[in-house]
Length: 592
Image (cartoon, rainbow, N blue to C red; front, top):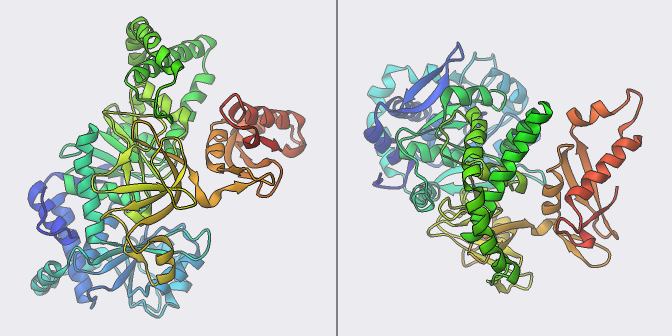
């Protein structure tokens, strides 16, 4: 689908014209049953929201806040805001009061959309004291008696005069929007200071959408009419927003759910593809493991045998196809010798692996039984989880990027799949790796800071000139702060964060993230933070998995003084981080 201009106004008109009565969204009614919402309905509601904003006096470039969680209405509201040249400023209801106060004042929001009266109640003292806010509009729920004018979306969009009185103004304002105009300001979490407002234009976002759709085909997948996915991440999550917009552009549908209801709704909706964060895949993997462990001894043995067969088969097939992420330019003698061995093992395992996969694919029935492929982004996939899904027939296509470059810079290819990598750059995007001395790294296996360049890069941080200059140089290279490595096959592999580097007292540099990711594979650990700056050795702060640990405790025993728990944790650390698992001596956790 080609757009006359890369703006949300033209996307709205073109999608309505192209897909019409096809479902754009599925939402839950009062009885918690899914109902379709067509592209026509979506476009009509967004247009009415635009006209309501015109009636309220919103001008081109005005910033409009949106405090909302996952749901069908927020994208309609967002399109209504941006189609007439206003700028949306989204944030979730889980934000702190300090963050919301800072964002509303820093962005100088003229108007505020709020999810419901409960969310409004949470932030009411802040909102009423924000001088720039002229009115509040609730997605759903009842209005509260407050000092600021308040409306509901349904109240505004049912006024007949909107269609009659603002048609011409809507078209004029929509046609006037340029792809270089600001569409959104997405504020970062602010965990390391005050939030920074990432400025993305219509062109940034829709170039990314069109490029991803084109690159999907190159990677071996496609998204279009008849496809359906699940939406359950917050609206300020750049990856979620990008994939929802991709669906609207391509004619696919999004069914909205929550993390708590995800498993049930997957069976009801039966999506054809998914996008989510690694934690969801890790939780799914963990539940599978728990179910197997709670079964009979025979069942456990059978399951592990089936997994072993398909994993061995897939590993040897990837060896022949050269799909393992190699960090050396040339194959070692051992890797070369392994090729004929892999041929033999494939022939031997093929019939058994075929039968094993038929059984193991039943695991995927919990996803609805129709998922052809799945994306994972906004964090590193655990190797064990990555390998498991690949082996049972659902390869996870990892994407990598950041809010500052519209969410995605690289994508793992299905037709040249390589485990433990984030794939290759999008068409039109360039990533170069540089050393601390500024030298460009082209050899595989050497870590470097990733600099991004492309039409998807942000315009800068809102009202933060110095912070913008610190991250984007005069040639347009955006410093991600991420450490990546090239593989011999030309893929990129995530290797940690540059600013998180721990320097031990002996001068050794350690990237904590790979170690943390390894330790988080343990079923007994929920969160892990590796520490040790300026110390002789590394230590770890560990949040245990209560469900696994509490049954091992006596009622009067403190977890930190329990010898059984202490030994268990030490054994788990050694299991995942040791010389045997590929870590250097100084990368081991010795302080616990």
